[in-house]
Each structure stands twice: as C-alpha cells, then as structure tokens.
Image 1 (cartoon, rainbow, N blue to C red):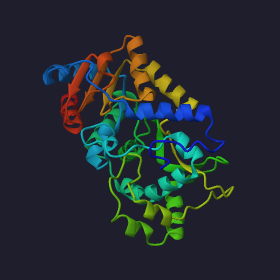
Image 2 (image 1 turned 180 degrees about the vertical axis):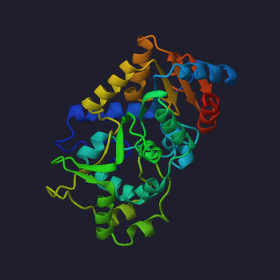
Image 3 (image 1 turned 90 degrees about the horizontal axis):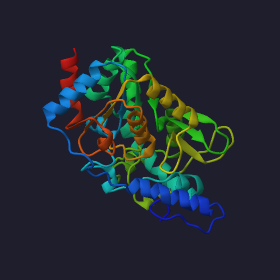
Length: 324
C-alpha cells in the first residue's frame, strides 16, 4: 500500500530524486536513538541545569515528550507511535494521490482529539519562564499548537518558533492558498455527514501527526474537498513532513535565537531528526552549555553537559520551584 513503505514508481512523478528523498526520509523515521552518554545522577543533573537556567538567556527546544501528559503520544518513547505506525513521507503525500486521500480520511477523525488537547503543566511552566525573561525563546518540534495556546493563556508574545509547523493551518500545494484547519473541518463535515462519529469507533492509535489508524473500507467512504481558490485536492497540513525541509525563513529565525542565547535546554526530545539536532550542534560548536531533560536517550546527550533522565512535568515543576 502506498504510504506504508514503498512508493509506486510507475508514475512519471516518481523520479529517481523523489525516490531517493523518500528512502532518506524512511531512514530518518527508522533512526533508533541509543545511549551515547550516560545520564548523571538526578541531583547532579538537576543542579547543573539549575545553574544553566540561572544564567538567563537560555534557548529551550521541546519535543513530543512535553505533550504526552496532554494525551498526545510521542514518536520514539517506549509507548511511542513509531512502534505501531509509520508517518507518511513528504514524497508520498506530494506524489501519491491515494496516500494523500488516506491521510485526510484519518486526519479528519484524529484531528478532533488533537483539537481538544489542552496545555499541561510543562507547557505552562515554560510559558511562565518566558514571561519572567528566563528564556530568549522557545523552539518546538511539536505540531500540536499547545505551546502557543499556553503562551496565549499567559498573555505573552515571546519568541516561539514551531520548527515543524502547526496543524492549525492547511495549505494548497497547487496554488499556495492557506486555510484555517477548523474552517476546512467544517467543509469536510458537510461532505461527510456522520462519518467522524461513526469512524471514531473503528479508529485506533491517535498519532502525533493528528491522524489515526483506519481500515481501508473507511478510507474509501471518505470524500475529500477541494481548495477554495483553485479547486485542487492537493491540500496539505502546514507541517514539515519527514523528507521535507524546514522553510529557510524559519531556519533563519532559529539561528537568530541561537546567536542570542547563552545556553540550550532540550526538553522532552530525542533530537532524532537533524532539524532539531543541528541546534545542539551549533551550541556545542559555540562552546555554550547544554542541558537535556528527557525520559529516554537523546541524540543530543553526547553534546550535553547535563543529562537528566526523568519525567518531564515533575522535573520542570521541581526546577520552577527552585527558580522562584
């Protein structure tokens, strides 16, 4: 089945560069993050990260581990979605109409769960740190929009960069038109009356990308709507897929934060993909301290001065109390 391992290559769209990019994306998805440096004893790691935070001017990078307490699974943890679900690559989404249709059928059902998710204590503590001026900014690899929601609730407009985009916006690959996801959802509901309510009982495994697992019989019943401007059905959530590059302007904004920061704190991320890992590499080359708080191994561990292997929300609560 396209979208689950191999591109159909009988289409002219599946040129050698497209197929090569797809294979590279699959390697990135399959990357196993193993221990490269042992975590320190909890008190030692905590003390080091407290010292790091005391210098202010810290850049925080977050990953899926921050949102698990909001009911959104991570990718590579013990219960992570990659154990049961392989995300679609950009090449599949762009060039395989069947895979794209399958994504939207599943996303139409799964997005309701994502839209109902609320920021948890970890999001709120990080927003409070931004409000207090402890951070130069926050870069998140998550596409759930929960950091932005926590910042709005806290009444702050501090630098927040969604490195991989946000599920709240949909774009047309044909003409570039952008549409609010809730508006698209209303159009999909009109085209598929009762579908979501029925399909949710057959759905399995809400995934970090906002879709669910559905049997093909449900996919075939789903009706996709078209772009409001050009009529194309090549609509895509405005997120960076595996096999797709982070937009240059977003990279530039991240680089500005790196240059303005005295250190880096990685929270809830395995840093498995290069778009996030490059931030740790830049910080290490600049000789700036790095701390990692994560439930499992992180690719940034070998670059880090402090490695605290623990649950995210309790660790941030502990640090917040000490910094008060």
